[in-house]
Length: 195
Image 1 (tube, rainbow, N blue to C red):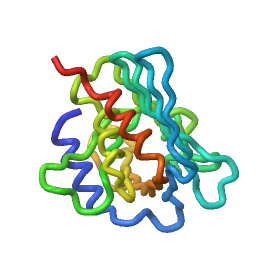
Image 2 (image 1 turned 60 degrees about the vertical axis):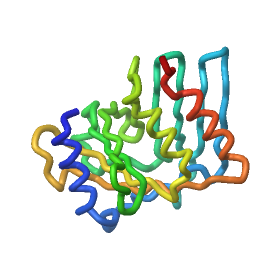
Image 3 (image 1 turned 135 degrees about the vertical axis):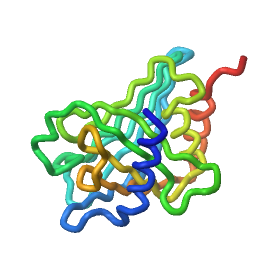
Image 4 (image 1 turned 90 degrees about the horizontal axis):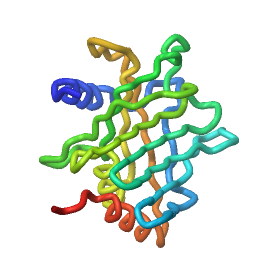
């Protein structure tokens, strides 16, 4: 995506403030722990639950590395959607910006990705051969720093970015005593190979 879009989304995120009144757009991630799974020699998966107040069935955050392929999948808890507009639910693409909550540190850039949307509540990013610019690899490094929360902003339209097309979310993160090892191993396993 173009840098100007990233700047516009980052600026809009700073203006959007708290989630819109009337819609619960806060989610808890990692409360049940972070699980690292390895398959073969080059497939590594990091996963954890995503919950929301009043939701019966949790969602899932899944990051995976398989050879040079990277994947990120965020499934919101059942009964939650990424936006309220049913017309937009048929669209299959979203611009998504993710950053650590709070004031960004100097030189810290948000993660910007184009993600497919399924069933109104499942965001997926597939990076076939991303190299060092991988959103998944950068998110893994961000999670290894154990931030208290992530801000996520989705652009629900096409063309010019308007504030009514932006939806802010807060992902509150939890890390247990043994989760650090899983996060660090995943970040290390997914880091680009040095040549």
